Image (cartoon, rainbow, N blue to C red; front, top):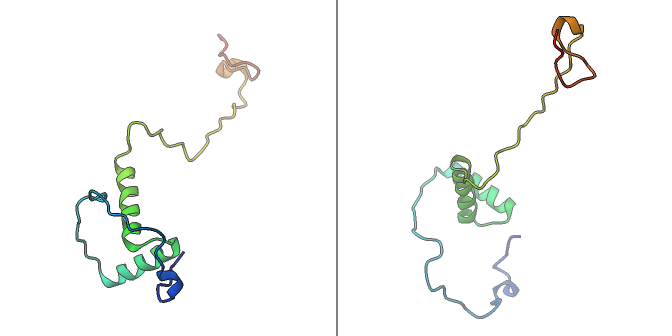
Length: 106
């Protein structure tokens, strides 16, 4: 949702002012991007309904999680399922019996 701050109805405070007792975000890190990159970031942030700063923080946090997964996160699920069909060999060829989970002594 994009606010149009040019409209007077969008300039009314939502409640009393609240000051944070400490800096919740931590240190300020200045980062520079080429103009073309900033334009794309602005478009993506706008389409996601977030500020540019919030969009960048989200992308950086995702990358940090990808590179350093925590021990409590489950292992990723495989992206494929492998199925194995028995070959058409006879029992005497392979020791495999299609109606049994065990190998036969041949």
